[in-house]
Length: 172
Image 1 (tube, rainbow, N blue to C red):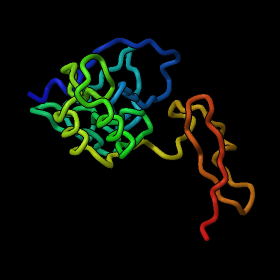
Image 2 (image 1 turned 180 degrees about the vertical axis):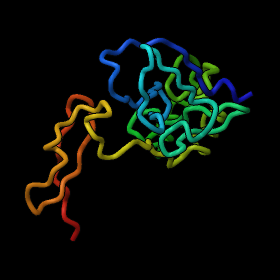
Image 3 (image 1 turned 60 degrees about the vertical axis):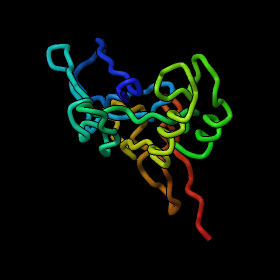
Image 4 (image 1 turned 90 degrees about the vertical axis):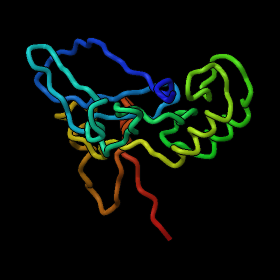
């Protein structure tokens, strides 16, 4: 019954050069972004990685077991990286709509109590991903971004090509 909630993907990807490890990141329209547990490397131009075999295939074990498969967690409707009251609000406001809606979490083309139930079971889940990454594993950030050259503390915001250093706010 619940297998409809989740989607299984298989595909091919060509990346060059194959000398470094890459995290695999799964994104789906209403699913919680899911990262591979460790950087993966290509062997003979090929990479095989199956997220569905164990929770520890995802960084932070951030998956849910459905039947015999580990799956991406559904419910991040607005793609903020967390399943929260905003997602619940969208699902509630779109209740009883028929068609292709992000709040239709089980994919049956109706936004109803089943979708709200999925949200209730996944509420407060967050994206889990590596914090400060080394450029050698395939994330675009300069080494200088990782150094603190003053007494201030910094966080590294990972946002694709817009990676940047952000000053932490002092707690009062």
